[in-house]
Amino acid sequence: IGNLYVRGRDNQMVPLSTLTQAKMSTAPDLIQRYNLYRTAEVYGGPAPGLSSGDAIAAMEELAAQELPEGYGFEWTGTAYQEKISSGQQGQVLLLALVFVFLFL
Image (spheres, one colour):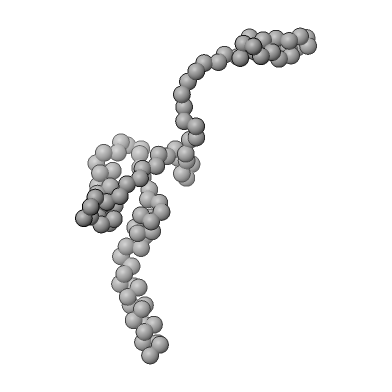
């Protein structure tokens, strides 16, 4: 930055270092957001012998115990689809039986 020059008010070249300070720092390249909140993605899967429903239940229980006040989580992708569709098997089965009856 000290080697760069810009024009000042009186049209003379002024070193950029007189106008600004530069320092090295680290930061994420991109800040991810979901519904306007800062986010961190966590990927995982069930342990061998367990279902995805077991993994979802374990994660919800762990989050309820360990997450500090003001923190939360939401499911996305297939886990989200599994959560919203759970408990609808009876309705789907009933609808399937109605269609079978109508086709006969």
